[in-house]
Length: 292
Image (cartoon, rainbow, N blue to C red; front, side, top):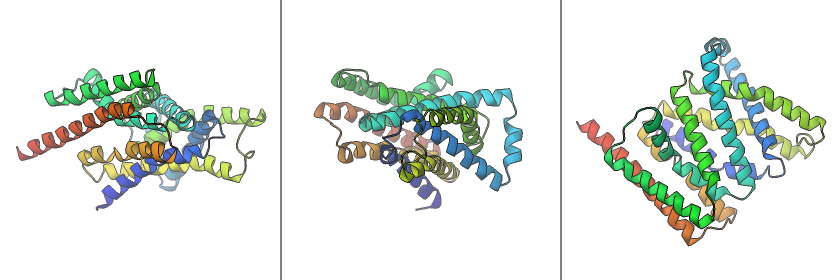
């Protein structure tokens, strides 16, 4: 296995194990968890830039209203995504969060058609239709719209759309995103501490380490992914990305014992079939282009 594949697998495995990490912080309100995640991620990324001698270049590249506008939108989207995810994990909805990341690639394709003028090949419409039917069935089985899955998949697809048209590389972009939310996170956490509701330094050393470590577990897989993306084909990344929701799904069902009925299996099965068809069609189309 080459180094790029190792980096990608490590990143996706880390993201797949996130439900366990955030469940360890179930005693901390989700908004505090996300605020700490933003705070410590920003400090860690700033340290990386300083230690690698890229701080001056970073500052020069972000001093533009257009750049700040792009990344403020990205920061709000990823912040909402993280907040919904952490809340859902600790509210016992890990299986539904995995559905969100299963359908995310298909939602990204749909956004590409709607906003970037991309065209779908005829066979690509089939997985979109199958996934839509699967989500509708799950809405009927749940007795409600699976808003957690749709919110997670939709917000991350929109985040990807913004990042696709944004001008900075992944390291600079994430640093700016967390930096833009840093003041809000800091003020909120200081308020919680003064008000006596803050978790840091009040729930023991283990919780303190997990809150601070949230910056590390956020940053490391993103840097691994960035390194992998430079070394391996996007088609391979597209296949490997399903490691994350698959692992999250298994954790929800097998470890956290969340209910999963035969009716839910039907809905998930349609989404999984859609993803298999979608991935196979992409690989086939890439092979045809290579041969021609």
